[in-house]
Image (cartoon, rainbow, N blue to C red):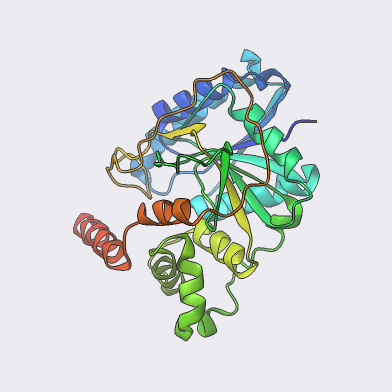
Length: 303
C-alpha cells in the first residue's frame, strides 16, 4: 500500500496548480490517495487568492488524477506551522506514514516511487528520521557510489516520515532553556547548518513560526539522519516573493531527476565531505540574522 500524499495550500493559485499537475504526472499517481489541506485567509488581502485556490482544488476529485482526493478546508487561519502539525497528526495516525508537499514544489515523475521505495527500505532503520525528495546540486566525491546520502538535518521541501518518528517531536521544546546556554548542544544542532540554533532562538522568542525548526531540533536530540537523493526529485518554485515565509532567491535552484530508472537504496556511511558541502549551503549564523532582520524591517514598513 502506497503512502498518502498531504498537500498544504494557501493563497498561490498558479503555484498550487503546477504543484498538483506535476504530481499527477507521477508514475504512481493513479494509486495514491491525496489529502489537500487549505488554510483560510489571514486577512482581507488574501481572500481573493485563497478563493481561487479553493475553486481550483474543488475541481480535482472529478478529474480522477489520483486514486482519491480529500479536501480539508480550515474555517480560520491556522498558519503554516499549525496546519502542517495538525494535518500530519490527523493522517499519520491512520496511515502510519506520510509524504508531504507544500504548494510551491514541482516533483519529478519518479517522486512518488522514490518516496514509497525509501519509506519501505528504511522503515526499520531506526537511525533514519525522514526522507527528503529535494537536494542541492552538490559536488559529490568521485568515489561516492551511493545514490543517496545522509544528513543531520531534515528538509521541508517534499519529505516523508513514519508515525513512530513523528510522534517523537517535542513541539514545545521543553528543554530550550538548557539548550540556549549549552554551547555543546548548540554546536551539535549546527552540524546540519550554522543557521539552526539561531533559528530555534527566533522560534522560541516568537519572531518566527516554524514547525520545521522544532522538527529538526528533535531529530538532532535523537541523533538521527535524513536520507537525501544525489539527484533532486523536487524543485522549489516558491522563492519568487509570493510566499508568506519566503523571499526571492535562486540560491536553492537545483536540477531535477529525468531518469526513468528507480533509485537503488542502500545504507550509506556518513560522508564528511558531503556534510561540509551541505552545511555550507546554509551560510553562517551572522548571515541568517542579516537575512532575517531585513525581512523583519520590510514587514514592519508594510504595517
